[in-house]
Length: 324
Image (cartoon, rainbow, N blue to C red; front, side, top):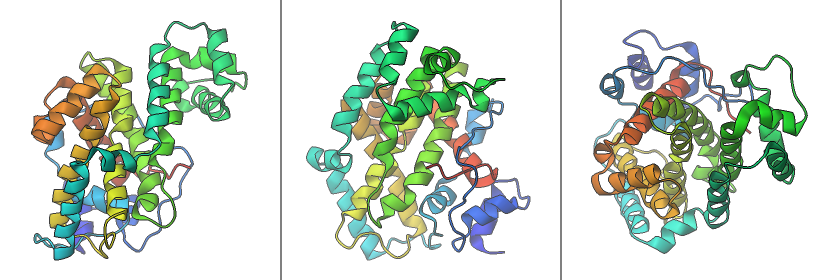
């Protein structure tokens, strides 16, 4: 059995990996093309976060995101050392970091405004939603989704808003506003990974909402944290695209470990100045100052558990889908 199959099999307690997981992890397989919606199948949250976190998914998830298997080497290549030095330089420059997500100055204020509008009537909300066709489509989709447990489909925007409620509308706005930040241009590493990262973000957001509620936190703050977590991935991959020489032909296992710490720092350094919510900002500061191990707040634990659940969903359930 090849190395990557053994790693995926290890995720399932030594049992053979499901065929879907094998196909998804195979470097020769094309990206999975299943139903358009990345449906999160609600399962009971793990009751032992420490046990859940004990499974190290960094390497198989990295390979799934980029669509290639990492070299089984614990030694960095010279090109990888130069690439890590480049990532560190970008992390140390406010201007360089900002340039990685050029949409942020436009979308973050819009998102902030949406978070503050909690007292509007359904009629006022419907009028606002109608101005954005993308938001109309997302609200209708959410209202008619399995999660809404609707018996009859709706097409009227006011009825749709009534069905999903203000909290659902806030989630819809967050999705519509943030999704373009994950897109890529041309034939770049970030572009090739964009759809899978958004898919994972979607599942993480739903899981983090559940985990936040379980810990007595604001469920929407959990949802937003899960949805935004992969901006660190997006920024780091775009920094690689802009480095001299770009991405190497194959990444090593040593690089995956070093990259994981840096993409978490990218997330922290980006969300801190955005000041979206108090908890998310505090989590960014904790990650910046103490690394992943320093995020011991309830929101940090919720995100860690949600990310683990979402990674397992992507790698092994066969329900992962590329969203468009």
